[in-house]
Image 1: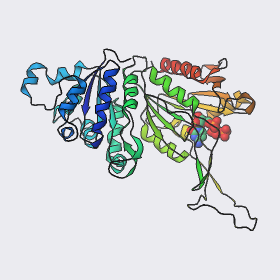
Image 2: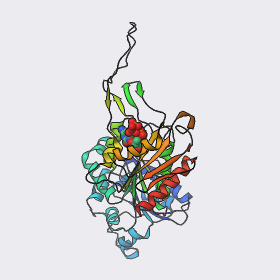
Image 3: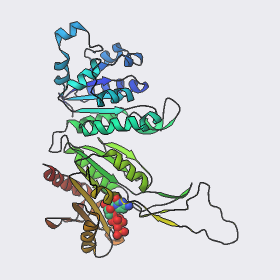
Image 4: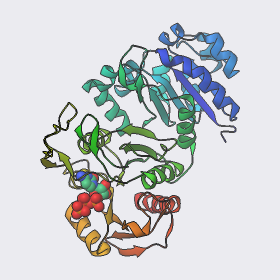
Amino acid sequence: MLNGRKVLLVIGGGIAAYKCLDLIRRLAERGATVTPVLTRAATEFVTPLSVAALAGEKVYTDLFDLTDEAEMGHIQLSRAADLLVVAPATADLLAKMATGQANDLATTLLLATDKPVLVAPAMNVRMWEHPATQRNIATLKADGVRFVGPNDGNMACGEFGPGRMSEPLEIVSAITAALADGPLNRKHVLVTSGPTHEPIDPVRYIANRSSGAQGTAIAEALAALGASVTFITGPADAERPKGVSVIEVQTAQQMLEATQNALPADAAIFAAAVADWRVANAVNSKIKKDGSGNMPSFDFAENPDVLRTVSQMAEGRPQLVVGFAAETDDVLSNATAKRERKGCDWIVANDVSPETGIMGGSENSVTLISDAGQETWERMSKVDVARKLATKIAEALA
Ligand code: CTP
């Protein structure tokens, strides 16, 4: 699958560096050649000897190794690979990359390369969420750097949240996607997917029947055409797509925030079934029956409309914005009006009446509405709808 592909792996100085040993093994199993570069800090976490043994290649650790400069200059080293991967990408490395620093071998290679770069961040949750890191990430995304992870979870520092480095197989999928030659190479596409959960109290929420299957298939189809995909999903049943950067959210408000943080993008596809309302008087402790027969009553507040917000951005709007219209009645006229109201370029209309079996099922029957008119596709699997849509998106961005 990765036969003959050359990966230059920059290992950063973080506890997650140990996962790179497995990553190298997995890449080698798939036929890739891995040239490892360790930052000085990385050598505190993994030894050059173990990295060299697994990679079966020379390990580079220092810019000022004159023998290596004679053997292979750093410029040449940065360009001999098909892809540069940074794992773990620490907050420090991301900051250096975002500001174009080149004060050691790793950062010099990253600045000198003309090849795509994929980073797998790993850091403490506060460091990840810090505005400085988020600014650096936005800069790197705008520069075309691809991201895989980080995941949510327990961290070595004892905290919980986003910041855990993706697992080796997730990074392998992202590498495979990054190396996929396709019309969407170097394009960043954002996809929202799944339902949102709007809390009532800590144990109850309002949700809908979206499985996330269509959004997941779209993300995978876009990645297969070479796109760098940011996939923002509510709590969906569908397995997460491979080879994309996944951001998990619960509520519509979080989905809007994650979407705004993930921009800029060349295209944005809004396949999520976002809850239109949230409970305005949600509470932090479980609502109890009080025995009097009185029912709780809820006030609702309207959720932000993610699609409309992005469609109507005055600055930095993606070139192509695609919405979905899940309707049960007057599908095409409702969807046409929705496209106008929201201001998106295309709308994919589908009938989600229970008898169609579409919501939660594996097939879809859609009509694509754009300036060019309406195009009804025969009923097909959600995977095929995704492939057809991804091809059209690639044509539109060409
Ligand atoms: N959408 C969104 N944010 C919302 C609601 C909807 O981004 N708060 C997006 C969906 O992802 C989809 C499109 O808007 O791409 C239409 O969603 P849909 O639920 O069909 O429409 P609504 O906006 O809810 O409109 P209506 O209530 O008229 O059906």
